[in-house]
Amino acid sequence: MKPQIKIPLVALLSIVMITISCSDDDENVTTQEVSTENLTLAAQVDVIDDASYDIVENVYLENVQDTRSTVVTSFFPECATLDVMPNGDGSGNILVSFTEACTLNNGAVVSGQITLAYAAVNEGTREVTYEYNDFTYNGHGVTGGGTVVRTFENTNGNPQAVLTSSITVDIANSDVDAARTLSRTREWVEGVGSGTWTDNAFLITGNWDTTFTNGLSRSGEVTSALRREATCPYFVSGELSIVTQNDIEGTLDYGDGTCDNVAVITIAGQEFTIQL
Image (cartoon, rainbow, N blue to C red):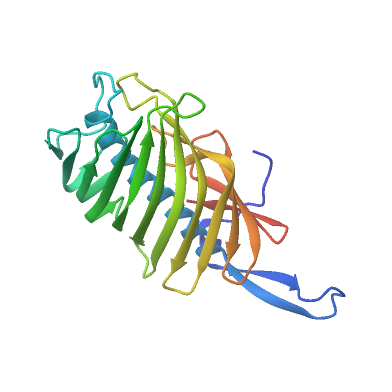
């Protein structure tokens, strides 16, 4: 990644002063305040959201997906109990229960339950609904759920999932909650049929809106597909176009393919490196 302006972690509590022109002749100028702490919270919710759904994805792939191969390496340890309840017509339900502080095989620490209901296959697609119940991901509370339309083979020849969801994230070590609605496509581009989760990779496109209880709102739209690799808890590359509640526009860059907790926000022409 090209050199960026580095912000120490303590500086995330500071306020970035952005000057925005309010008229064509630049005679009237107002100063908007953009908190780097708020922008970091929004980026963290991006990660929490997709990482939580990744668990749903693995439940489905290991237990329902018709084109799955024999599971060689499971995503789930003994502290996760999966009850698969087929209805006999191709549809069914799954209840996933995690003990307190259950460490998944990717290192994430979770608790609570996730429920899935899947329909029978219809012309190469299957609809799945899911819901988080008293669920936590690395200490963050996640409630709500969504609907997924899974396609066994898209135009690229890859499996994909098209999601619509509405969730709330209770951010750990913060008094702020985030409500999110989204429409997202998750294309499975690597590891298909290998029988292990460790080589899976996904490309993610779509858009989402996030509203925080502290008054911040931020919308995001993927302009360069976000890449998620199963062994990394963060997006490793891709770019998001963002707009805040006061119509300040910017971008969020997740990097060049390296697995790290670093992302770069560009807002009003200024670049800031944040830690997720």
